[in-house]
Image (cartoon, rainbow, N blue to C red):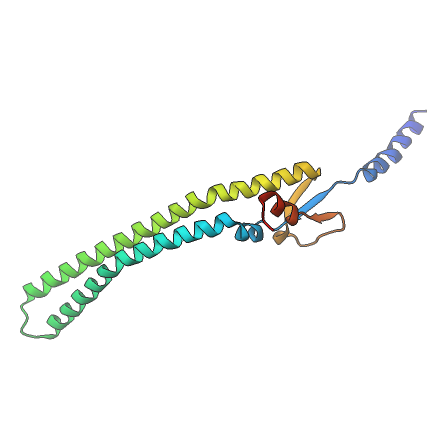
Length: 168
């Protein structure tokens, strides 16, 4: 009797598992992220900040070039005293260091602003994907850009995510 019950269970379990079909969705979050209106606004803001930094760096670059030309001219003249050359070289190095510090500070600020601007947009996208998954009863929503194979029971939910975000 126990053997018959065990055999019945072993036969019934795979049938039950086959009867339960899981829904999977796929979406390309990068593609959707790039067409979000908030991203365009954030990119414009970053572009303006970058242009401001470039405008501030231009006079430093020009001054650096001018000092370098002066130093090369003095160095090429054999009658220039060594003390003068040393002073000009020190001045050139100080200016170069100031320029490098400015460039590094600007780069760090741009990176920080990018993170600050894009974090809420990324969260908004993830919230939309999560909502579509919950509403559609999906077992999982996967990134389509990393899939090597997409079977028949996978549904592209990109349009649903876009609709949730108000994007056409």
